[in-house]
Length: 169
Image 1 (cartoon, helix red, strand yellow):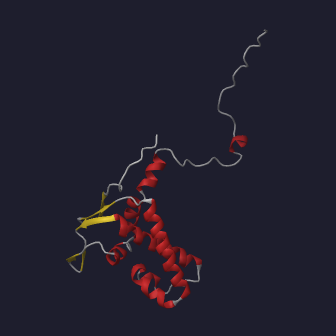
Image 2: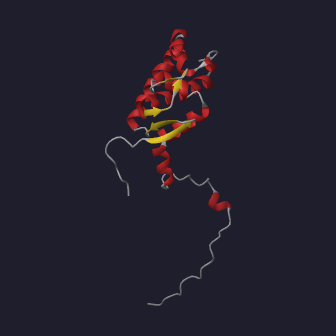
Image 3: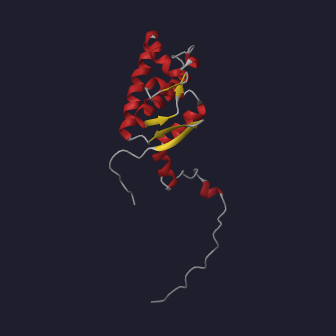
């Protein structure tokens, strides 16, 4: 049975470290589409002009300072990080215990980008945002396909069954 729900998914607490906790909900299909569209526009700007790179540099961090956006691997890495920031803007509803320079802060795009530079925190938030995907897989949907030819290559484990008796009509 497929059980559809109205409204946004419920947020769940995500431990960020120390006593910091964020309330993060799974992304909706529309939010994923919006994030993808935003990132596509940003990446087109990065590829087209160096000035655009400066606008996105704050979200990507120092590790992207020497990025070569003509290299497909750099573009893919930037795309993944920017998409996570965009989805976090939609899905991080609130938090407690997050500070910058000992001052408590709200979850703004800039602060989320800074927070998501930590790979452990990024993985936790990504998991919460993608929770609907993981839930569907846990319910058995999206099972992996058997490799081609696996049935013919392996031995049967089922016992042989005698054929049914021949009936004369």
